[in-house]
Each structure stands twice: as C-alpha cells, then as structure tokens.
Length: 259
Image (cartoon, rainbow, N blue to C red; front, side, top):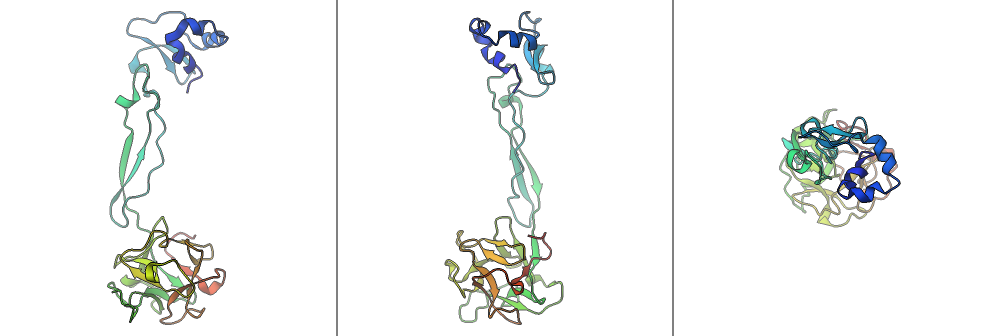
C-alpha cells in the first residue's frame, strides 16, 4: 500500500481531510493534489516514486490491489500427470481504474507429475515386499499374503512388486497394486500389530513419518515399525512396537531424499 493511499481513500471527503494534520504530509507526496489533472487523466498512484501523479489509467501498468501469487499447491495426482494450482486476491475492488477484479487473472494452474517412489531396503539389505511376492496381494488372514515381509533380492530391490510410494502426507502405497499400507485390522496401532496392504485405510491411522535414522513411525501413537523378533531376516513380518532408536529398525526409501 502506498504512503499516500490514505489520501486516495479520503478524496471523496476533501473538506474534512484538508483540516487534518496529515494535510501537509500528503501535499509533499501528491503532485496532483492542488492542481486538476488534464482531461482523460486522473490523480493515480505511482508505485515507484511513492506518490500520486496525473496519468491515464493505461499508464498504471499493474492492476491496483492485486496480491502476490500464493505458493503452488501440491500435485493433485500421484505418478500420473496432474495439476498444481495457485491463486491471488483482489483486495481493492474500489480502485480508481484498472480494477483488479475485472482485469486480472486470479487463478493459475500448470501440469505436474509427482511420483515419490522407491523400494524399501532394510538394515542388512533385505527388501520389503508383500508376502504374496507379486502385484496382487489378496487380503487373506489365514495366509497373510497381504502383509509386508522382508525378503532377499538384488541390491537395488529392482523387481516391480518391490516399489512403494511415500506421498507428501505420509501415506505409503504399494505402487503396482495401488493398495495402501495400513495397520492390521484397520485399528489404532498396538504392539505386535502387522503392517498389511489394504484397498482403504482410516485417515487417522494411515500416516507415517520417516525419522532421521530412517526408522518408520506411525503418526497416530508414535509406535515404530520393527522386524518381528527385533532383527531383519528372510520372510520376517513387519510389526509395530515401541522404541525407535535401534539401527536394525532402519527402513530406507533409498531413492527418495533423506528424511
């Protein structure tokens, strides 16, 4: 806002303004205060010189009252082309000319492709995968084929069914099946509860955070993901337990930026 915008807000009540102590201040900064402007010109703000001068509306390059653009929103889709959006506001609909609500673009969007995918490598170099060993982990509480286990694979954990997506809100998806990582039974995590792949998961228990030591923690009650029995091994289940500091708990999304 210009130093002289108060003058502009008072220009329709000039008699009152003329009697105030601010009168002398504004006459120093407003060249067109005492002399009328030419035909087709108005007393308009000069944002570079911090004053008001006589000019035509078309000379006022930037629409009045227009805010800066907001930050871009998150991409609205994962691993396919989506949209990011930003907006700005018109805060001065009573502008003298160049009314921002009429002339200005207040919404903008662009294409985006956000795909934070990575295999998960454990301490001692096992890879995390569904027990089914494929991209079709069917929910089955007798075989637990939809649960997450550790398995030996190549160093890069390069097989298709070993890829996971960790989104910006802390949800973890098994990429090729599209299922989401969830505590067993869709309930609040408790000690010994397995991590399984489900079609849906309650919003209050689905989110995790990556700790600086690469340990994975559920945000609902701060339990961390452990290998069953305390140490990584072949076909070992992933479970929730208390304690988040032991190095053997590391689950490294090694293709993503460090937490």
